[in-house]
Length: 73
Image (cartoon, rainbow, N blue to C red; front, side, top):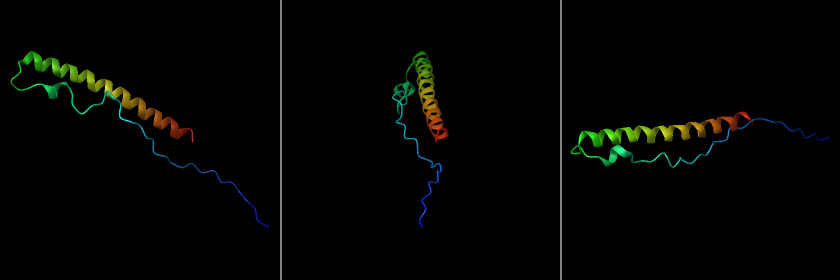
């Protein structure tokens, strides 16, 4: 006699998340030159802090979503 059993075992699945549009390869500082005045460079540095902060928020949210999906398995 053949018996069939179902064995449930969680399997890790990679979380595929696209890079958020806020995370780009060129930031504000990449557009300034050493020849620019200090005020322009300072503004670019401050803008880059904001850009990177926005990127970090989106990446952390994506990471939490991946971890949440893995726990529900």
